[in-house]
Image 1 (cartoon, rainbow, N blue to C red):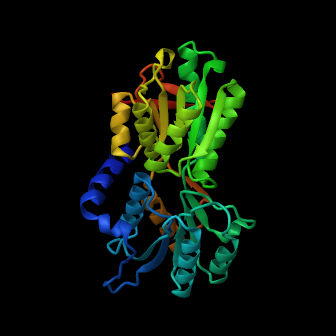
Image 2: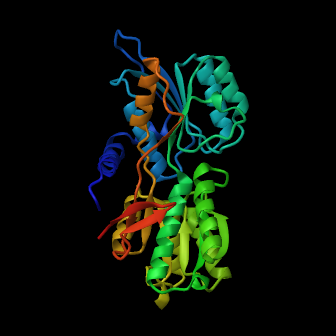
Length: 346
C-alpha cells in the first residue's frame, strides 16, 4: 500500500483507540478543562458506532477536540436514532455551548433543531453525512467525503477491469448491498453505481440495504445467492458489509476473487479502515476498496480555529481519498476527465 500520510495516521489512530480509548468511544464523555484560559466548549453528536469506520471517526474527533488542545468537549452517541441526536442538540443549546458538531444519521429532518441552534447564535459544523435543509445558512460548514465521486471512481474501476478482461457489458451481473437508506454515503454510492450501470449497459440485478453492518451484509448476500444464480460482482457500500458478503458466498460453496470469467464472484467495497477487510484485499478476496477517510477531527479543529479568529471557512470541505486494489492491471481510473491513481496492494 502506498505511504499516504492520512492512511498512516489512520493505522496509528486504530492502534491508539483499540488499546486506550475504547471506553471513550462507547460511552458519553465530557472533558473538563483545568486551565486558566477559557476553553472552547463543543457539543458533538455522533450518529452511533455501527462500523469500524465510525469508531475511527469518533476517536479522531475526541483526539482533536481534547482538553490538551483547549476544548471542553461534550460527546453524545446517538445510537443510530435521529431522535436521540435531536435531543442531544437541544441539550447542547441549553448548555450554551460555543459550537455544535453533528454527524447526522440521515439527511432530512434537521430544519427545526438547526433553526433553534441558529437562533441561539451557535455555529453548527456538519461532519460525514450531509443534511438536506431548506436554508443552508442553518449550518456553518460541512466536512467529509464526496460519496458520489467515491461511487463513480469504483464504477470506473469496474469498467476498466471488465473492459480490459474482455467481458461484455451485458455479462456484468451486479448486486448492490447498500448502506443505511437515506444516508449521504448510501445515496452517493448507490447513485454512482446506478448511473454507471445505465451508461455502460451492466445488469444491475438487485439492491438491498445491509445497514453498514457485517451481520446484515451476510443476510442480504445469502438472500441474493438464493434468488439469483448469475451474480459475478458484489458492490458493498462499506467494508463490514463486504466481510459479511464474503462469509455468505463461501458458506454457499462459491469462490470470491477477481476471476469472474472462471466462476469467481468479485467483491468491491468502501472505507478502507477495517483490518480484516484490508487483509482480504491483500488476499484478493476483495478486489477494490474506495477509501473513505474518517479523520475529520483535525479538519474540524482547523475550522473552529478559523471561526474563533473571526474568519469565514469554506462551506464544503472534502477530505483526500484514493482507491486501493489487489488487481495490478488497473493503475488509474478517469472520472469526468480527471484521472485518479489506484494504489496497488500486495
